[in-house]
Amino acid sequence: MNILIVSQNIALGGAQRVVIHLSDYLNRHGHNAWILTPHLDLEDMPQIAQRQKYIECPYPILNKVGYEYKMRGNIFSLAHNIIRIRKRLKQVLKDYRIDLISAHNPPSNWISSFCPVPVVWSCNEPVSLCFSRRKPDYFPLSAEPPRLSSHILQRIYESVDYALCRWGIDHIVVLSRYTQRGVRNIYNREAEVCRVGVDVEPFQRGDGQSVRKQYRCENSFLLLQVGHFKPEKNQQVSVKALYSLKDKIPDVRLMFVGGGALEEQTRQTVDALGLSERVIFAGRVPDDHLPDYYAACDLVVFPAVRQSWGLTPFEALAAGKLSIISSDCGAGEALSDEDIGFVCDPTPEAMAQKLLEIYNTGRSLNGMVDRGQRYIKQELSYEAYGKRMTHLFESIVAGVREPRSKV
Image 1 (cartoon, rainbow, N blue to C red):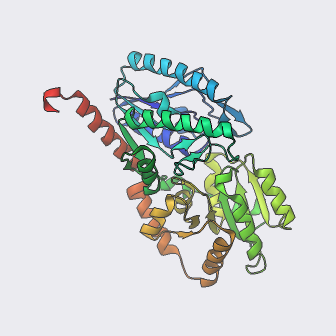
Image 2: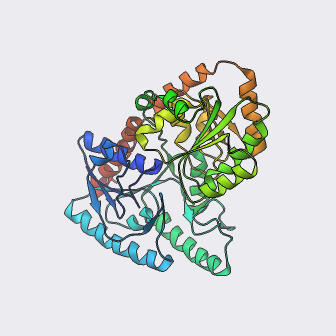
């Protein structure tokens, strides 16, 4: 098969790692995969990213702001560039004799809709311009309170999005039942759950002692949160939970790995609560160094909200560490179903209570870690994900190629 993977950008991030590993699996198993993207930033990306085949498209839809990517311009310039990328995409379909499109982060689904070859949309979450009262299952791109003009644009957006994704996409794949419900509610159609996690082996080589020594926390009870500083990552909850625990757990400390727009706001909260000696801002860390930070911690916290999945808890498990994660997160389904982690409400009180409970029990949690690592190897490795997605692609392409009399 000739597969075209469409992604809004290739840069350091969890969703982008999934794209890279899917491309790599397809190319290693006798297929041809190319990644079409208008934004290619391989800085700090692992070697596997360097080996993939890219088709760059000179019509930017994102701007890099610090370490983050944000939508470029207004909705009208975005629409104009989507149209130009669609034109480029249709030429690529002919030049590379593409059999199927694998669309990933929005607006890749819009770009790929109603194409002459089958389209599979890997929907991390259905996104909208702002919060939608009519369809609250959307993930809003803007956390700002919507204005009247935003409401009008949102109604137009919802109509276009429904038409393109209801009738212009052949198959939708999601990471969790959480997102499956959202797709059903928004588009009135079913989606297939196909989960992805991490490969265990690279995360088992972490040097935690070097990190603890670097930050002078050799004897601390160390909590770790990994991710960009965004509203949905909810770092404020971790800080406030730490404040509740500072007199209950000796030398408890919290480390943040990542950067982003809300980092300064988080620092202000830390200072206001008098926690500057207990909170470590480690900054942005290359993928190859992440195992060291997981190895250094005692527990991982993941209080994110409105998250379709979340790779962090599974990266932690691969490194032999357990996580406490938000109940408003798709990854919680697997942690609860398999009993390989802890789930609580995404509030400071609930997280502090769960952390204290785990600390005070003092029981061995190795059984949960062993179970979790077996589950990842069997169900959530990039190999397992690539195999499932390839089987899906093959079945769709085979169906298209069958004579119509057999349909």
